[in-house]
Length: 331
Ligand SMILES: O=C(O)CCC(=O)C(=O)O
Ligand SMILES: [Fe+2]
Image 1 (cartoon, rainbow, N blue to C red):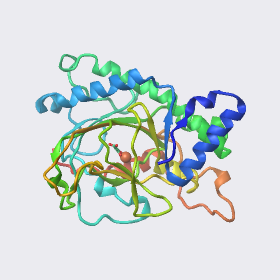
Image 2: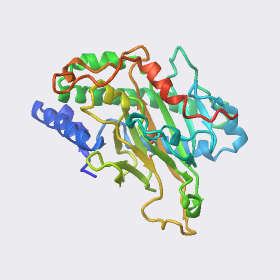
Image 3: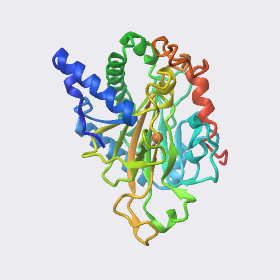
């Protein structure tokens, strides 16, 4: 994995700022994923984020189920128990590949949207079950949104898209973020390939800002060598792993291609052994275009040598097209 990009240089001299945007562009174009440090979200805030995440999943199941995600995919809010959602059902979606055998994800999650969303409400556990959780998450959402806009501005600059256009496309913060817990399991549970931590997939939004603990197991497909997945480690939890999602692939007419990723065995665990794979926590902030925005490619990416590859569709319709396949429908 390439070196971590110092995002604070974006606010340095014009030369430094230009160089960081160009480095980001080059890394994302070849890898679909980049690592950022000094991005503006303080390490203490991220540490607290992991702590709240750990505390939430440590609640008794009946408490977590008070805030349960509906059995169907929308609204995509609340707690999903282990087995409720399987990402394997959308593996290969944009590659036009229909998934073969169904692979179970062994994970539990919480999906959270903006506190100001006028279409869907968040689903919370009562305050006394986890004091401060709701307020912290609502504030984190807003802080992450600010960083998202800076990353999008840097990408726009590097791509030659007016920064204002990129901002207008995302100014409603119709994003989602997700807390993930992969429980400790014996390695033998993953041995026959019918279960994994999270099956390979691409995210559907513009970019994903991912934070992970030090357990490992996250892998991204090499864009130059399809089928070959490489591990992505973070040197510390506050590093942002930046993923390109399908919406940016569409908007840039494949100049950026979405990063296909998955979570499996940590590198230290022997496949098929009786070892216990330790629990793992991660946090994914999915930045999405405004629901009513069109995902038709920006005009500068449509040229005689790069004809338009995508139909017009709104961000909301596209999101729903993807998400409806994720949930089993079982309550
Ligand atoms: O847990 C991770 O590191 C990845 C999570 C992920 O890919 C997702 O939720 O879309
Ligand atoms: Fe993902």
